[in-house]
Image 1 (cartoon, rainbow, N blue to C red):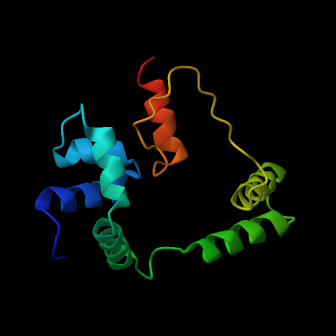
Image 2: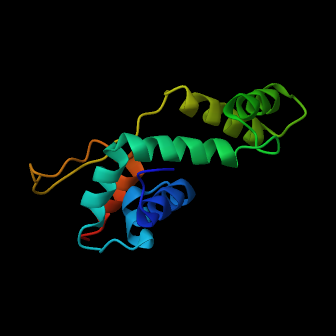
Length: 134
């Protein structure tokens, strides 16, 4: 795709692989010191967002279940009286989580730097950042 450097392409591929923007930036070759900032900047660029979408479409295949198929499977397990109760409960938990029935809370205690934009990071990425100083 035009407009992307090789390093940005590596960032995108590692982001797809790990789901963690800061880790993707480090693996792509950006310095550890600037990885969080670069990750946020990269994810905000339309050309990078387009490249990630394009790569995800390329990686999809008929062998990969989409969310509709996964949810149908969970529903079938949950409703199957032959399945063990623990498996039926776990399937119902997955369904509830994907419908937003449970809310994860992340507590933060510490200084918030006003010049750092964290809005583009996932909850998992924020947790890793929060736990990196411990």
